[in-house]
Length: 193
Image (cartoon, rainbow, N blue to C red):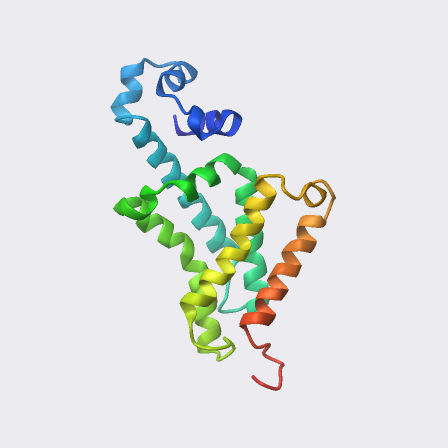
């Protein structure tokens, strides 16, 4: 049912999510759908939870900040985030626009897990004394805002020359990672380090 619901929102948008249509697509009765989901909100929460679980897996799989330079970790995290956002555009919109993400304990917990790899990158840099300043929270917010902002611009086709030009997303990813690194961190080979 989750897969069918994902297909439904990817093709028609999150607002078109419909349990009756979902029952027909899955070849089950409407009461069968309601045994799993009390209503549209419960289905939406399940989709968002599923999305954050997949995002967490991708982010954790692409970064190894203990062994990597900070720039490499930021770039890997940004690449995984963008790939997820572009693969699951409507789900990503739903995940980050759902206000209950902050108030529902399960959604809040899973969304906090998604921030874990980024916190780890910044905290390791702080321990290595390569974080400029000492405000981990601010560094995390700035990195996330930059990466998320690029993802939204690409999802909304606000930069078609980037999405339609082979290799252009990679160029922008590299540039953002470099800017974030230069602005927030000290290079290990820098005389300041």
